[in-house]
Length: 180
Image (cartoon, rainbow, N blue to C red; front, side):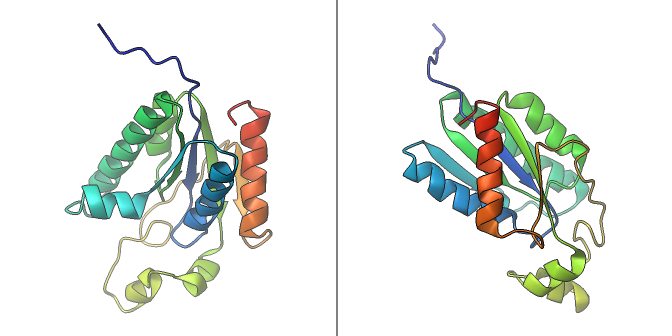
């Protein structure tokens, strides 16, 4: 007999944007807020998932596709059992995010925007500095395409609002649609 779950489906909040735009920072604030509300939450940061589950994946379009597929699968499985899932992933192509949306019934897409110059200034991992030295040439939104969502549930310009304000905006939208 199949295992049937009668718990409320969790929400999947998928943050997309170029590197250093603020995805992980905002997701971390929301994670803390959901915990404070007593709600189950899992924060799937793409870099952490890649490092721990897929360390051999590179950053080719095929590898990015595979990484986002794995993130979407994990998010779908967790949300099925009532866990609210935050995914912070560049996920540069719409097709990647559309697949995640199709797999996760309660889905909120959040576009996190910052201009390239701002991302270069933030550069918490030194990625842009490495690119300027010629060490990498696969940054989405600079060397490779980044397709902004056509109709995200939430659009955030991190030069216009703080990470805390952005987190509140995302949570408000998730509440409006009845996911939180």
